[in-house]
Length: 364
Image (cartoon, rainbow, N blue to C red):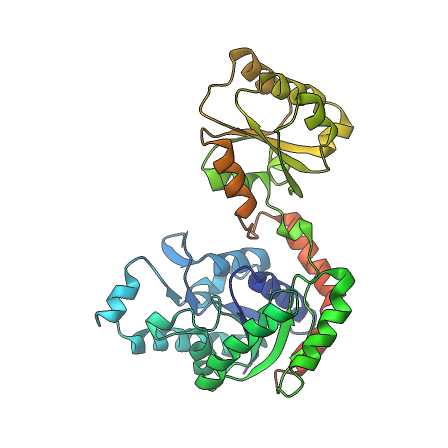
């Protein structure tokens, strides 16, 4: 039977899937057969002629596990499923048996199995399949990924621990993630002190990385459901900064930072022409990843021609600029299988910042 670990989190956007990708990468250096399962999948995604969870599809594509994809996503939550469970049309026992059977088969095939939960400890409770309960059903030791910081992280971890303890699931590792590099050692020191009486270890995750946190141009285009005028390489470019073009044309150009997505109102023809022209210069091409043109006013005909004839990546939405800025700055970019730069970075950082042997030693 495989060694296994249940990857949980204190909430959304802690880096749970990034942690799963990292551990699979590291496990493959030690074990020949490494598998993945997302027992309860709240993000349905079409895969050939059936549905799987989005994270299961990502892992399958990145690590070539397509042959196991049906087992990797045994319970995919579709709209209306929660009502079916509450109404008794689908029983909780049926769902339990689906995921237990899939996990057992993967354990028989694998030497090491990553089991990824779906958010904080209580997610899935409406189905009778909270993360804490699933971890117990699968008899898997738990690794909880949290955010960085000290106070609120300790609060979040403590709140999540209560449900795991109630369900009888055993938490072995807490992994604070997205740590500030300069505060990493001090943060982990205080986390160790705070949980000194608990039967788990604290193991630092990744330091905060603007590359991992940043969206690609393609992601932004999909966020607004608009077409992106860019080549494939430009579409995959990772944005590190988002700036609003509110100043004069000269000032906007002057304060551009490296790999910036610039939000420009459609009425600012002079600025758009200037950006299209400057993008031919390598210095400015490095700074300006692309332009998101917003606003209800149509782009002037001549300005549109200049944009179309340039190499400047751009996209167009008629939403208000303020709405666009609010949406894009609050969005959390998730890794996709096409984010080759991010995935390569995740693997590289995993080798530098995670001690897989220590993690593995806690799972026996």
